[in-house]
Picture: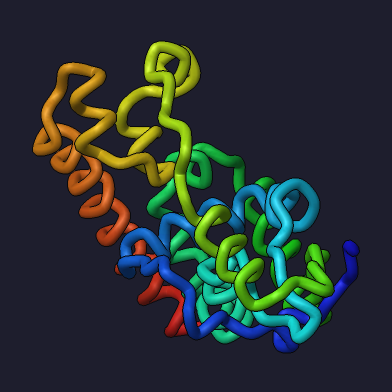
Length: 196
């Protein structure tokens, strides 16, 4: 059953078998913030009848801890690390921020509530939802995005580099250079922001 639920009512599952690094959490945050329709409509968080996540624990964490609990300045800091955000016009960037400012006022999302599952079925669903069965077809992925973009989307750098014939260090250096440039810009923007 699909239902609109306040994010504060959702609970991270204590037996969630997945973990996420702080870098990957930021990548997920950028993904959510720049493509909220995926979260809100296309790939719903799955919960049980007690609002405990069966799938989507990391998305709940991002929504509660990185979006709801922080202000627009911190969102912009994270978003600046994304090529898509950097290439947006000022108006488009404002639309992204405005969407989330409005969402924070009424932080609800659609969730898929799975009722009547046994504890064993819940555990099986948790594992199956967190298991990656397939793998990327890099021939097709190459037609969509370059290696730095794919890594920026959260695809494993070693796998991307293996396919593209590059090396992880090259992609890491590209991302590091972008990050350094971003830090310089944020430092400048942050000084202006805090002095207002």
